[in-house]
Length: 151
Image (cartoon, rainbow, N blue to C red; front, side, top):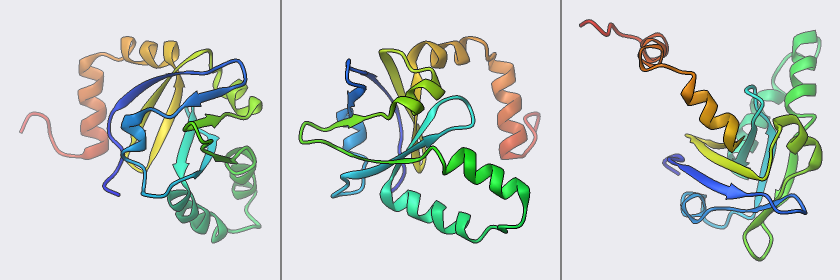
C-alpha cells in the first residue's frame, strides 16, 4: 500500500454507522474487511487497516511495562481501540464511546494520514483550517520537515 491520500465526507446514521467512501475503499489493502478504530491525539478517531494496526501493536508490545507513561499511553490509545468489520453494504459501526470521545456529529470527514485515516467531526475539521494561517502552515512545515524556507 502506497498510503492514503485525500479527504472524504460521510454521514453517520442513527445506528452509528457510516458508509466507507469509495475513494477510501480503493486505497485499502485488497481483502480488507477488519479494521481497527482508536482514539486520536487531536480529539478525532484513527482508522487503521488491520495490517497497519498489527505493526503498531508490535511496537507497543516492546515498550517497558514498568514505565508508568507506557501504562498511561496503552490505556489511552489501546484501551479504547476496537476491531470493526465492514458490513455487506460497506458500512462501519463506530462504537458509542469513541464517537463521544471525538465529539462526532452526523457529518464527518475522513482525512488521510499516510498509514491511517483520521475521522473528524466535519465542523471541527473545517474550523481547524480556518484557524490555521498560511504562514503558520509554512512554519509548521519547516519545523517538521526541516530546511530553511528562505533558502
